[in-house]
Structure formats: C-alpha cells, structure tokens
Image (cartoon, rainbow over all chains, first blue to last red; front, side, top):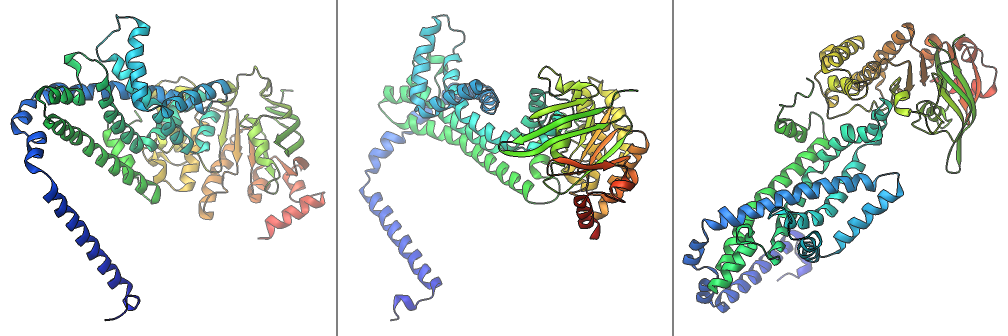
Length: 290
Length: 246
C-alpha cells in the first residue's frame, strides 16, 4: 500500500470525505439507538394536542406575532431612520444622543429592554395606556431601532457624496436633499439587510411572552407555553416552532434573492435586476415622471 | 455699470493644514465666459466649488449676484437655485429617469407645477439633443448623454450663472465634442459661465477670458489669445506646453 503522502490531493480528500460521512452516520445511529423514541413522541409529537392548537395558533397566536412585528417594525424603522440621520448630523448633540441610544439598546440583551419597557412603561404612563399591542410593539421597536439605525446609516454613507452635492447645487436644503435624493437610494441599498432585521424583530417578539398579556393578544410563544403548561406536554412548542419557520424561512430566502440582485446590479451593464424589481413593486408602475 | 455676477476677493481656502487657495481675486460680468485652467491640484476646482458654497471660504469674500456667500445669514439655498453646476462625474440621480432628473428640483425648489416642470424639462432635453432619452435611466445612457442631461437639469432652473467642473474629463474622447458643443451654444446664447477645463481648444475659441491658476493663486488672466496664445509667465508657458504637446 502506498504511503498517504503519495496519494493525489483528490484521492486524499475523497478518503477524508468518506471518513467524515462514516463517523457522522455512526454518530446518528448511536444517537437514534440511545434516544427514548416513545417518550419523545409522547411529549413533543402528540397528534391530539397538535390538532387542538388549530386554528387558534394561526388565527390568534400567529396573527398577534405578525401584528407585534408590523407595529414594532414601523416604530423601529421610523426611529432607526431618524437615528441614522442624527448620527450623520453636523450637530454634535444630535450625533451624541443617537449614539447613546444605539449603544444602550444594542448593548442590552433584548429581554432586558423588553422587560424594562414592558413592565415600566405602563406604570410610568399610568393604567389607561392605549391599545393592547402598544407596549409590546414599542418594546420590540426600541430594540430594533438601534440595529436598523446602524444599517440605514451604512446605506446613507454608501450613496456617493456627489448625489448630495448635486441636490444641494440645485438649491435643495440639506433635509430636502436627504429626503428626496439620498435616503431613497440608501433604502434601496439596505433593503436586503432590512429584510433580515425584520426577521430578527419577528423572532424578538417571542420575548414578549415574558410580559403578562391578555388572552386575546398572546403571541406564538406565550400561546405555546400556556398550552404546554396546561397539557403538561411540549407539542405546542413544536407547533409554534413550525409556524415561526413557515414565516421566517421564506423571508430569509427573499432577502438572499434581493442580495444577489443587488450584487448583479453593481457588477455589470444593463438596468439592474434590483431596480427592475423595485420598479415592478412600485404601485405607480414605476412611471415617476408624470 | 451693473455689478459683476461673480465677485471673489481675497479668497483663501484651507483644508486642515493644506492651503489650497491663497488669495484669489476674480470677477465675472454678466454674459461673460471665463475658463479657469491650470495643473491638477492647483485649486481650480476648489475655487469653482467656493462659488456655490460647496466649499466654505476660509477667508475672503465670494459674492454672487450681489449676495455674500460668506455671510452666515445668507440664504444659500436660494442663491444655489440660481447657479447651475455641472460635475465631472455628472452626478445624475440614478434612481430617476432623465426627465425626472430635470423636473425634480423645479418642483421641489422652484415650486413649479408638474405640467410646467415637465414642459420645461422636455424643452431643455431637446436643447441638449436628448428628447428621445427622456424616459431612460442614467445607467442606460453614455457618459456624454448623462452629462448633457446634467446640463439640462441645471438649465431647467433658469440659472443666472453656470459652473462647469471639468465637465468633459470623465468622458470617452469621442463623446467630448457633443458636450462641448452644448456648452458652446450656451455661451453663444449669452449665459454667464465659469468653466474649469483642460480643453484648451474650447478655452481658446469660446472663452472671453482665461484665468491660469497655479498653487492657489491666479497667475495670469486675460483674453484667450493672450493667455493661451502668448503667455507672459514662465509657468503658464510650461503648463501650456505640457497640455498642448500631446
């Protein structure tokens, strides 16, 4: 038999690959033999309990998760955009204030922020706090705003300086130029990362389960936990997990597609796919000339 | 006698420790075309950018149509709306069609109605020979076409003064002519123009006056036949030899 070093790199890598496969397979088989399948099936995959989750897991829990996500994202995006512009301001006080906000809410674990706002805000502002979704949406919105601010700031900085100069030279004020010329281009650049921020924020809404909420606005995890406690069974967690995946996986696929579209645009000739896509998304059919 | 459109007096500009302009005086009368020539790094672009306050003067006075841009209380946006600026890299808005590029400032700055802005924009695009490209996006246009859209965008604001910052330097050689022709027609139409350029042919034939700038000061200025044809200063001669030889 020839020495290992005499083998060609391709042969060597093939042998290594088969070894990896064999070890992995052996591990899986060993695990499969060790696992107490009947218990797993009873505790995590009880078909009756799974069936009992429906339709409420969709009509209430998933709906509430999406409502918290939607309100939360609107808040996060609005505040994040404002913070991004403040970070780039000439005025040191604006810059400093934005930086403090961003560092605090990126530095705190999301669960801490959500607990502080979720428990603190209703007390601070009194009992008659409006709307059942408000506190939770603000909490996840604040967390998201810090991350979105940095994303949007990077997008604004990626817009060539000449764009601002051209807009200013036409007589637009700084704010007008930002809103009309720079920010629209920045947002196009950051749409793929923003899609990812949206997914992160959606997942963060699960942390709202620590807040005491009324039965009608339980989000997915709270819904699952309550049922899991009531039935002394973990099947509701599995159902909730599958519902999360059903929402998040398509979104991350979308983000990936948008990213590759963006790469195409910057790499070569012709109208970019990304822009074509956005023109097709434009409710006015892209004819912004009229 | 009416006051000049541009009056620059004792202009200094420093970037940190780097002194780029070291005392520039220049006046441009209405209808005059002044070409600013000089080696790269001489400060000619900085000088031009000071005329619409894209750079703030460190010292000295810059007046446009009688308004002192160095006065902290001056309404700079109002002054800029009357100054057209054309950049080396065009700086068209890439997310807007050619037409939208030309209408947007009319609507947002001059508060013209959509129909009026559109009509004006189409007229300006026709003037630069690009009527058929109104609905094209910048990345589908050649450099020369983009630059002509940029000129149309500036002209649509009915400027009293046009600034050109090396408007043809980024263009393929065969596209330079189209842009220079548009600029020549503008000059012949009586537009007041300040043109930073390396195109000596344009300076010689179109300019009323040529200013040679080096190391942050205007070394020599006068009619083109004098400054380009028979320069007095050694430095001007050396520069012209360099650019005219190849």
